[in-house]
Image (tube, rainbow over all chains, first blue to last red; front, side, top):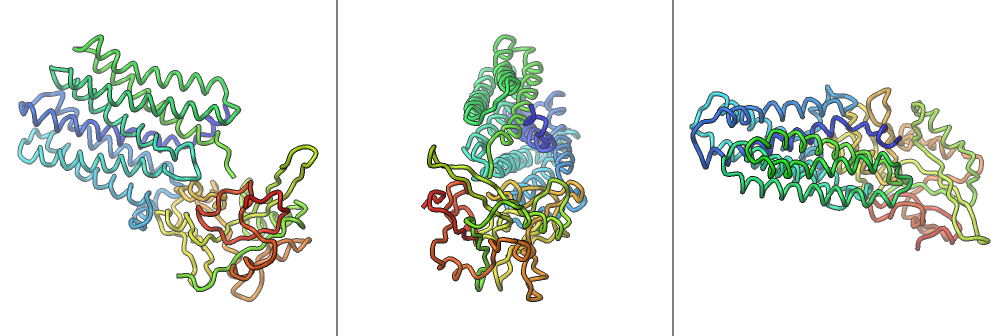
Length: 259
Length: 186
């Protein structure tokens, strides 16, 4: 399983996962607060967790760099480089999420909705920018649009699961979770099908793919079976599945023959 | 705006895959183990009984539209206006490796030891002193030359469209090959 061992991009897998988790949670807590302004302990906890998640992602992403102390230079080419744009938008998201998490932590209601909305929009922009990084013709397995579907699916699924935890009426939340699940499943299945074009594809790779798709589907299933207490379990399954899928995304790029 | 683009000319009909250019480049650039700033690739093609093999020596192609210059977040790459050489500044490199993803030719090589990328700068110091790059001077078959792209492209029988290389429209590489016609894409 050389390809999976060679997947040295774990900092990027954690970074993209943390970014999408933070964005999904920011959207869910902002929407939940708009519909039911009464304070709840869970919403306060989730809202406060947005900034630590982004900060964790940014900190871990430094491990990807050969020279982390020069990371500030990544903002030097904003007009042309997609990577510069991603760093800029993620930094803006981090600053906004710091304000949002502070408001949630201190249970301050003033400005909470506009700051929550700005944080969510910046989060969506950062997720889109991070997906755009992988639209490169030299890596056809990434350059098909499914990476954007996967990143969007993760964000939507996390937002839906957070809403399912926050809202008593869970039907709309389940619908959102199912939408995210469908995006993740389709993108994962497409990636899997592409792997067959590049032999050898070892059995462990197929097992990993099967496990990933199973975990992704398990979230909505748990939520449907146990609408009241299923959300935490569904969250665990979804986050584990998304992380497994992200590691696969980097691993399969090694399978593809390159010049 | 580049005034006049410099380019490589590689005569693949002469190349015998001795890898002298590769070794000389590695030595001149003190490249780490496993990192090959210039690489000779060997390809087999055709169908029995009409089979053949050919060798392509390639480093950075100093492309006319280089993806590394566009996408490097730290602006570690610049394209020299006077001759279009794509120069990598290791001092600005942050080791993000995005250039190794976007370059179709695998030219930027990540050096784990230094935590940054290295690539062919066309021995620019030597070139500015009136010399030639080490790959050119070391080739025992005289299969590698440098010159101006507009002149090299006019030579009879040269091409950039080779079936085993990435499509040239991606970055417009400043290299031309003389190669047997069966290996061509055009």
